[in-house]
Structure formats: C-alpha cells, structure tokens
Length: 552
Image 1 (tube, rainbow, N blue to C red):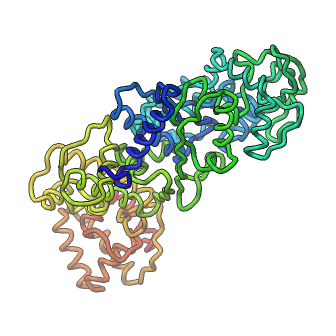
Image 2 (spheres, helix red, strand yellow):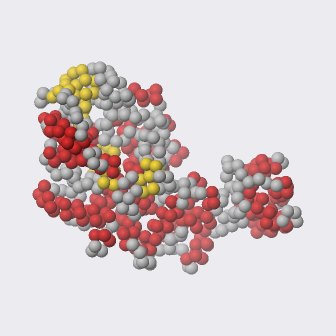
Image 3 (tube, rainbow, N blue to C red):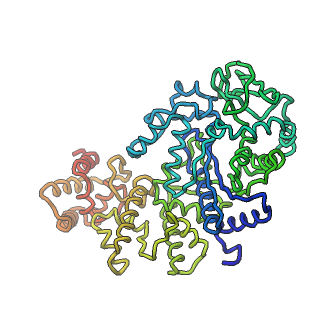
C-alpha cells in the first residue's frame, strides 16, 4: 500500500504525524498523544470515538517508530458542576453546583443512575471506593474504554494544579492577559472587559469555582469576587479577597486551560470533535495561545465527526444516546472497536442498536476478517481495521465465522441445535476456537434479540407483550384443546408436533391451528416449530397466556 488513498486512516494519520515532527525538527523531540473529558456524569458512547481514535494512533505510531510514544487521557476534574444530571438527588446535589468536580462527594451507588442489575460486584467495589463525583463517573468511563483495549495512562487535572506543575503556565497566562484578550478578539471576535483575567479561584468560603471572577493580578496574588448571580446554575456567596493563584487554589478558564495542559504535559498530538474544531472555536483559540503565549508548536490536530444514534447527536446532559457502559456490552470488544476503526474519522457514525445495525456490523467485521485472511478480495482498509481491532494486537488465524444474524434467528428455534447447524454449514467439525466464538455470538445475539431486534427477529415468547392479532372463536377453542393436550402427559417434541397437527386437522385445519399458536404467543402468523416452541415456554406463563386470551 504505497498510495496514501489506499492507507487506512490511522496509518495515514501516523505518516502525517511523523512528517510533521520531521518538519519541526528539534521543536518536537517526543510524541505524546492525549485526549480529555470532563467527568460530570454518565458518559455517552460518543466520547468513546475520541478514546479509540487516540489509542489506535498512539499504537500505530509506536509500532512504526523506535521512539517512546506517550499516550494519556486527562480527566478535567477541576471543572465546575454546571449541569445537574437528572438521575442525581436535587436536594443533595444542587448545593454542590459550581464546585469543582474533584471536591464533590461521590453519589451513593443506588442513586447514581447506574444499572445495578448489570453491575458486577467487582465494579461495585470500585465505584464505592470513589471519593469524589469525578472519580465515580470517570471510573465508569475507564471501565468502558478498557474493555475496548484502550490503555492510555490516566491523568487527573486537579493533581497537575495541586502539585504546582501548572503554576508557570498560570503565571504566563496572567502576565500575558492583554495578549490573550487580543487572541480572543482576533480568533473568536470576543470583546472582553478591562478587568478580565483567564483564571477562576476556588472560593475559600463556599468552595465554588464557577461563580468567581478574577479582577486583578499583582504578580503574586489575584483579586477575586464570588458573585451571587454570575451564572444561572449556581449562586456565589459574595466573598471578595486576594489569594495566590498557585498550588490548586483555582484553574485557568477552559480555552486557556486546554493549551496550558498541552504545554505542561508536552502534548504533541490531540484531536477533538468537530464542534471544538469549527472556525473560531476552542481548537483555534488553543492553537493561538499555545503558539503566541506559551511559544510551543500547536499539537497535531485530528478533527473527528460525531457518533449519532438514530440520527441524533449523543448528549450526556440531555440523556440522549446509549451510555458508554451500555455500548461496550452490546458486542465483543473487537467488534465494538471495529465500529470506530472501520469508518474514517471525518465521517459520521450513525448507529442504531434498535435496527439492523448490529447484525450489519458483525457482517462487516466478518468480511474484513476474510479479506485479511485472503479468503476474498476487497478493500484492504477493512482488513487493516480488522487487524487494528484485535486485543493486544494479536490477530487470530483464519477460522470459520458463524454469521450473527443466523445465530440470532436459529437460537430462537428450540428444535435446532446451533452446534449441529453450524457444523453442517461449515462442512466439518467446529474447532474449540470456533465453538467458543459460536457461544460468544449466541450471548451477544441474545442481548440484541431481548432488547433491540426488530419485531421480525423476535421469535421468543415474552409474557409482558400482549398479542396484537385477533383470535377467532375456533382458534381460542383450539388453544384450550392444545393446553389440555400438553397437560395430559410428558411429551417428546416430535410426538407432540404430530399430536398438534392431528388436533388441528380434525378441527379448524392444520395451517390455521399452527397460526393460532403463533398469534397467541408471538403476535405473528409463523415461528419456530410449534411443539418445541410450546415446551420451551414455562408452564405457568403458557397457561396464563391461554387463560388471558380464552378466559379459561
């Protein structure tokens, strides 16, 4: 693959990073890939795109170079709580609004918005060990992206501030306030007031940071006010005073804070979502500040598109979209990773778990595997996406892949033996690896069928779903007769199937009889073989449905 157009986007980006580093010469002696997030609540799936993108680029850079590539993920836990997640107790957390996230207590697990039924005991212990709100929700996100084989080192912003590592960039920012104000005007057309400084103090009296305004700087201390009505989402206490801005007493405002992190950490590669990368946005501001104030090269930028669900942008604050923890449970890690790697970062990913997106994703992954194994011709970028999706970079040898949608359909037919079906399809016995893969896909297919599959793929009885198809009097009588027939003895499926056929043939007709069963228990006119299907339904649930429909 010599033509750039045939390169996978991660290889192309790595190639461009190396060319950029070479062009800058001694100004860039270490490549450091970084990404950031403010952990103010449950994190949505959209944030995983940046994590996977930066992780894969760091790994491709490392594999292509002898130099040590640093890969980090920063949690901006000095940011204030400026929006209250709907699942948190208002009485408990409204007084915390405006405080830095690293100073807000972690919520009780049962009041955190987490699905406890799907949370392991080990995960619960990690959550319960969290001291702060930031740690709590960051841990949830870390759990999610670790499952996708993303292994960035974690950096906490408050530790950078409290350790004094940010002191010099704070001083530079305050000393160069006129230059920063000029950048705001030139880049974003913001006209800032005369008494404005890019720093917010944590109020020593009420502990809030979102309500304070710095009004002066004398080279040693800043003068500040904690204003009662500075923002609508928090109320300041009115305290005024002076304080040293160093050692974690406050933080730089976001558009200065971001390039300040680049400077202190030595970040050289960091992309961002397109909302940050628009003209005059925070990325343009960061570029001007890092170059003009901190006198360091602007990190290599990789502006990436959103991930949408059903066409809507995911939002943590509005509760739109699948959370990251829910997303990584939908499929095996390599499949989830493949979703992000198989599409160029400048293309929108529109993923709807409630449609056929999951079976389609498995199909694309399987096709990419076959191309990689040279079992079929195709786009080599897909093959590369498959390779980069594997945990630890260990690519499996060629093997049989049971199709996900076949697994999802056939597993709902109690009369079918999945292992036998796929053995026949392969034409030989499945290896231990292939049997394990079949069982893995069966587990994930069950999740899809239970929660997301379209109606035509749901062939399992659900007692909570009321059938929508009307039954005739004859059909109701047949169902009553079927229930008496089943209760008469212990049946083998083959014998019961014949008995059901004979019963139907002697009354309303075989076709209408079997349709009555499917209408009653599936809301459809067809389904799995009736005897196996009926015997697979718990007795009490089957009897309850017949009574519900027939009154007897």
